[in-house]
Length: 317
Image (cartoon, rainbow, N blue to C red; front, top):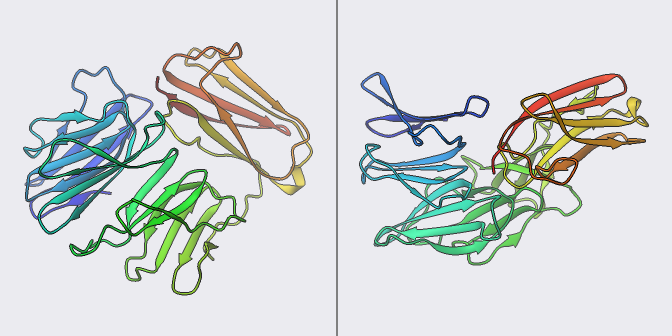
């Protein structure tokens, strides 16, 4: 969604199949484009951005680092190269502003980092892997209190911190196998937290419960065989592919094959006697011989009980 300040509107887009990344500013009814990779040799995904009108600062979190402009987009500097920056949060204290970012998917150094406005260096707050998103507990962070965060970790659940990320409490119901993709705090009720997952939408209400419960708006289970878009995408180390088998189609054999842009098969999987429900396959970017494939667009095709489904994904080394 666009970000709006008193003068301009900003928006970001990314097309993985044509290696296009763009960041735009709407001023005086005209859109202006900022190219974050002017040499055209890189394909990056824009995950998030933050605009500070007062200081003319723009921060764009991408799959290949944090891009920062301190002159309203005229010049850009890349920070955190080779890190996948998935979230940007700011907190205004008594004397200065603090910027928090969350990174995911490149190394054991992934986690949450912060930088104070009077310094040029980043410091680690917490180390985490597989972060899906980091959000503040409310849209208006108090200057008198420590930042209150919610952290969604793709394969571990939801965590809460009331001291700016120093310590974290697991607030996930361990009986639910959640795959977190996004979080949102209640706009009118700070006690409410919404979770976007591969299994549907879930709701956490601190005023009535201490656990995550499934929202009434969860989508019904599919009636047909389904293949879902891989996550993350683009990916560097590994990606997860999910497919769903209805109860009346269980017991069959699933065949998944991975093809490169030349149509050559690079990896294949066979799963027999499949049970009903959601299934997940992880691909580590290696071919059948165990060799890492080249960067590019790959096609996933899965066949089950006479039905074929396919999708594309982007692998970045």
